[in-house]
Length: 154
Image 1: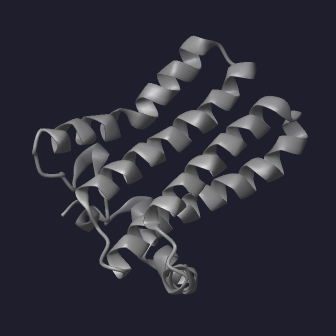
Image 2 (image 1 turned 180 degrees about the horizontal axis):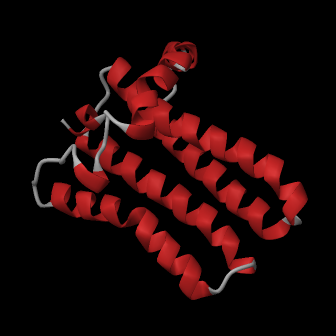
């Protein structure tokens, strides 16, 4: 793995205690997916409604939490033996919904065409991968739509 994804195993190790706590309490991976969506939406709302200097800290905290939930949901599913194709698709859709909700926060300061272009560029590889998965194609683990934890698709 190259680039930022090479940090994913390190980051996952930092969250091992949280995963263990979630597993012990019977938390559903889907709950963590929806928590990530909520964090993305809250970050978008903070971008839209808070003045620029005051939005920075809440947005940073919410996006860090969103990243944590994005890591935890699939890892919890794998740790507890609850991986399913439905869960993998929900995970992917939840990640994209969180991304789109956060990007929507820029609509108050940028033209629609620019925000829509950014949203398309940020999410198109995942939409293509979802379409391929729906058609029965295997998930590719290379190129611009690489997914470092593709085991959740099995």
